[in-house]
Length: 365
Picture: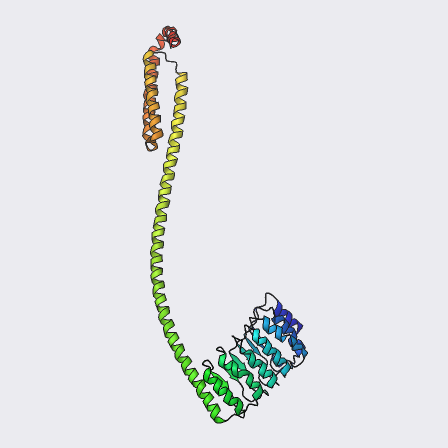
């Protein structure tokens, strides 16, 4: 039993159902499991039936059921449960936020334990099915359920069969059921209750079932209409979303295309500027090496430099004309080179004679 408790307590445990009925488990062994239930977040169904759970080991059941919010179904049939334990179960049900079905059939629960469980239904807002079949609950124990049945809107079924109920309980249950609109099942067979009360209670249950089915059908139709409307809206939104996605994709492609074009233009502009700078450097080197001292050549050089500066200014204002400007500069450079070369050939003989004149000319400037 320790091993089972350890298995349940593991964080990685995935056990949702445990059936250890008819295993000669005592209240001490069950106590271990109940202590683990305080922190368990997975287990949903626990069957402890046909074990002897009437000892002190179940003293933890109150705290266990109060703290556990995951366990949905607890079965403790034929466990020799006494009133003392039943009272603890009743006190636990007051604060329990998980159980939707509880089976305590074929135990030793009498008026005290039954009354406690009935009183718990005044505040419990989760429990839907309660099986107290084949216990020893009498009219005093049943009194604990009367007020609860008039106020509780969650409980749907209680099994009181094979107990010790008489007409006093039958009459009270009949009046309570007429006020309860949620009950679908109230078993009272094998008690000492007159047929007239049993029939009236059965008729109330039938009316509740018919009303609930009608409400459910109306709710289903309403829900279907709502879901259909929501589906139509969803399809419309989906269609609009798909259209938006197409437009977004198209816009994204256009943006990428524009970015690529801008990158190409920028690269071409950078390349054109680099080429222009290199050509200016080459031109400056050529001018330094070229020792032309003819006045006409200097005038032509000045004119060419003016053209180059003018073209450079234009390039600064209009980057998109870089290529044309570059070609113009290259043409000018080629012309200048040809003219400079021709002039050098023509005037090489006269170079010696005009050097002195050129020197004097530069000194004057």
